[in-house]
Length: 118
Image (cartoon, rainbow, N blue to C red; front, side):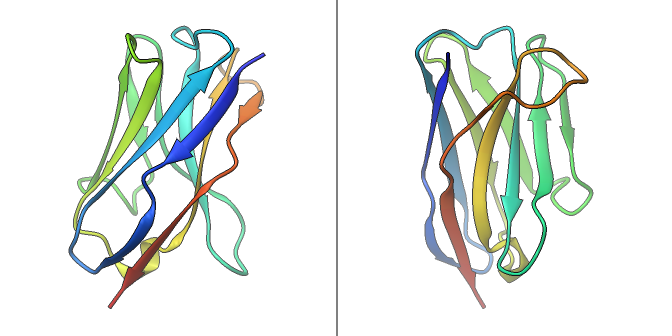
């Protein structure tokens, strides 16, 4: 069993930066793919970024060039560096771990709120 805890959210102004962290406990998730999702009020949850074990990264078009996902195997943590934030980035951000590529995400964190004011 893996427990994921997100942190690093907050209230910032447009153009600012934030770094979110997703720390895993219970067991190492170094072999898992880890992704960030977000959900804004009244909207469906959407994919933001993903990193595999090797590591290969992928991003939603809306954040490409502004957000960077990375992982620290020694700390069992995945990060999401968010630069040039926009009001439309406001959402609850969740990290999720995928044990088998192509299948459902098995573990989810509780989420961290990111609010970007204009």
